[in-house]
Length: 190
Image 1 (cartoon, rainbow, N blue to C red):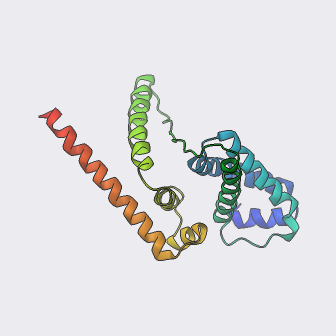
Image 2: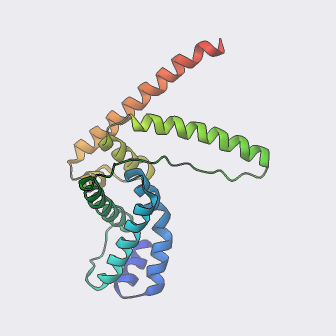
Image 3: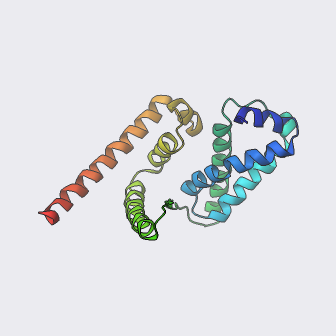
């Protein structure tokens, strides 16, 4: 089933479609939410709240042009409201790195690949943490979630050109960091 078909079925009250939509997007939403908020339980709660809200208001929902965009935008709004409330209550904001576990046949290959992936993930996380939060989020939306610049602009409440600028500046910073790493590493191999 397409996202649009599922969404329409949810609007009509189908519990099966609702469950399928939840299963299809939970991991995507969770991964995105972890980039915004450190507390995995809070992210999970925000996702649960989002889907409860969707179910409660299913009959009044409009047809979404992009279900993924709608869900991410709604989750982002919920998390930011939660962060704002946490900040007002003295809790710190944070980010969590995301690691991907490869699936390989051989245990040795799996271990080596996991170690390489962890090292790369740590480097990338360190580099991304040096980016301003808006650049980091714009980059994530563009390259991890494959959103168009117009969608990023809508999601972040900025102009499309500003979204393009945020992504380009973030890429420039990451390139400089990568080049500096290469320059530092080259003498060790000579």
